[in-house]
Every structure is written in C-alpha cells, then in structure tokens.
Length: 144
Image 1: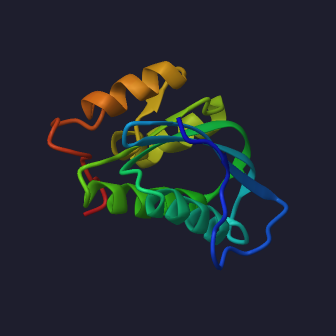
Image 2 (image 1 turned 90 degrees about the vertical axis):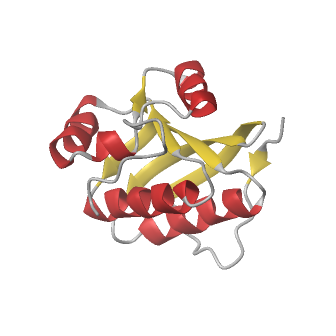
C-alpha cells in the first residue's frame, strides 16, 4: 500500500482544495479530495491527479465525501482525468458523492463516464473489474 500527501510539481497552492493519496492497491490509487472544486481550484485537482498518474497508478478511486462544491470546471477536470486513465486501460470511480452532486452527474451523463459507487470497497471492486463503464471495454464517453 502506498499512501500519503501528494507532492505535485507545479501545483498551485490552493487552500480551498486538498487531495491526499490514502491507499494504493495494485494499479489503483484511492485519493481523498476535500473542499470546493471550481474554476479556481480545478487546475489544482488536475495537478494532483497528474501526480497520482506519474506515481504509476493507472486507475483512480476518488473519495468525494468532503467535496462541498463541484461546478462545471470540476466536471471538466474529471472528464479529462477519465480520458487520461482510459488511454492506459484504467478509469476513474467516485464514492461518497453528495445527493445534489450525484444529481448533477446524472443530469450531465457523467455518471456513465465516471461511475459512482456506494463505498470505497465497492469502488475498488469496480476498478479491479473495469466495471461500471458500460461496455466493459473501458469507459464510455458521452462527450465524444
């Protein structure tokens, strides 16, 4: 298991958003994200997740329980992350998504691209099987 604070080269100092690698199983990282994901912090999220991928993980499970706000910039960052991981046979899964945020994912169709699990173990099971992305051939992209 690999865990701890992420050191992201070139990441902006954004106190409104924090990301921490809390677990690593095989090629899947579990990252806890806390704070607001908006236009000002979406780049910070991208930088943190780039650090996770550079550490050798191909899939990412994101603990969204402490995310208090996520706007279109945050959704765009998640789509970009899903695209990057899919290029390497991986994917992105979320858990702990608040009801209002879950509704936003469903309205936009993003829940098909970045599946939402009930808990970390469910998300890790989906990640291990590549599940929750529709066809089983990798994530379905409703934005292409």
